[in-house]
Image 1 (cartoon, rainbow, N blue to C red):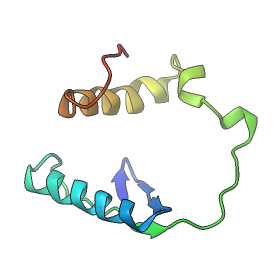
Image 2: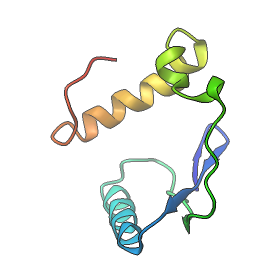
Image 3: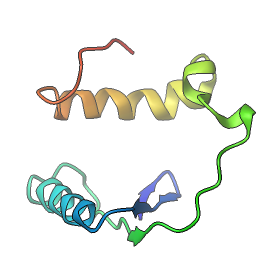
Length: 93
């Protein structure tokens, strides 16, 4: 699991090939010392999926002015855009 501000985020896979992709990305990030702490993401086979309630869908895009989005999410997106600039579309946060 990724521990970010005491939040653990598991990575669920649907296809076995995606597990290999996820493990490769984690190895690359660790070898490049992208994060100061070890990556502890749990890669788990996906189980039943339940669609989010309407108020939780597109939360970030609907609530960009919320403090949580500005303080927590925006810096993470900016960092990812910098790290993977050659792989992401050019968008402004």
